[in-house]
Image (cartoon, rainbow, N blue to C red; front, side, top):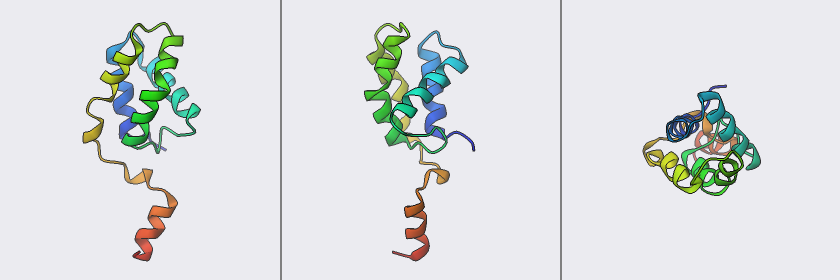
Length: 101
């Protein structure tokens, strides 16, 4: 399954804001998501924003990134403009739409 647009956005921003390679940035975000019980393929912009604000700073601190809070703020810029992926629908929301309620 493909990664969500929100995941890709945050990974690209993290790679730009740090000395991380593409693989390091994506791996760090995946670990933060895993800590929160979320998957890269279905994470919404709102969910990843919370993960970046609450979980990612410690991950970055553990990796020796200076000023992790600033890096996290930079990584979430533009998230509000990303529409949730259709694939990020929960089973409940799909059935709700199908059932018309």
